[in-house]
Image (cartoon, rainbow, N blue to C red; front, side, top):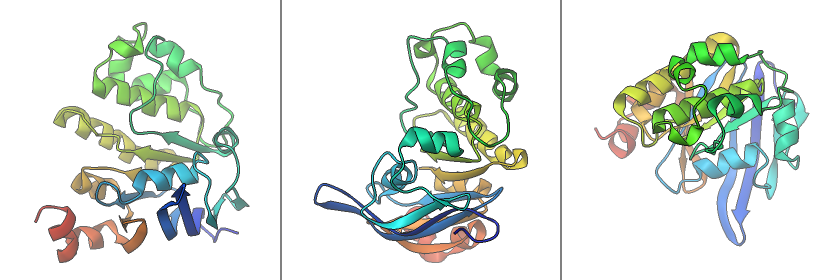
Length: 237
């Protein structure tokens, strides 16, 4: 069972694509109301880890617990209803549908805070301006806002973000990451994979460093940001 305060517990989890091992004995936790960043180079296994948590990729060893229930082996749609929302890399919106339809297509069966369409539009005013437009006509930043808004409409308690600022302009990147940081005040927890590691550490409470499928460092966001070897390897110092 998860410990007091812990919403998500990943314990000794391994996963593979065929014979290629992508995760090796990964353990981490996300507490209630906490933002946790997953840092690492391309190919470290960050997306694989999110896919394992959300049920997209079966694990080969270990266990995953969410809200005091073991969840590994369950299908993604059952985990969505349990309160886990996944905003994947690439956004995966429905381009031919309007912004309105993309938001309203979500089943709000989660157990977390209620987010209405108006809540999402207030959070991302640009979407209100594009409300009747096809989602495929939005800019990259607007599409990312829509993907986040759609994830919130599912009423998650935990939301998984995979590279939310990837390909965005500095303005949209700052806006999107700021919006993710503000979710803490709404009572949500988040697990954040983000290429802009400095920006991720500014909004995260804690962080884990993933290297070749294994956790090699963990600590508060400040501890990770200040570590000389982390600065040299990942932060360009």
